[in-house]
Amino acid sequence: MLKIGTQEEIKNLAGSEIKVEISLACKKQEHFSKLHSHNFITDVSNQRKNGILVRLKERIYYKDLLSLLSNYEITKIKEVETSLEDLFLKMC
Image (cartoon, rainbow, N blue to C red; front, side, top):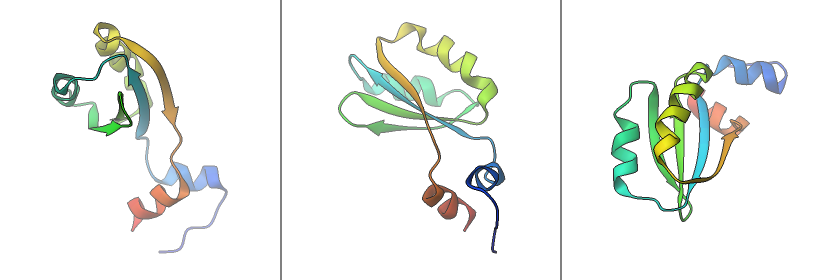
């Protein structure tokens, strides 16, 4: 299926999932299981030394994620923009 439009229009076709990269002072396996147990989080994966990547179903769940993270020692947090390559793979 061929999709034509601006980069932003194409990204909007992929849905509302948000990726958030979180760097922690110390990463433990229990962080993954606690985060994975919430239905608004679709995936949690390793990123670099002390980082994790959390996928939220929608942007409205940022508040819930930040509430969960209040018990973690966070050194950095940022939203990761979905690449066109990721969109292509998701839509195929």
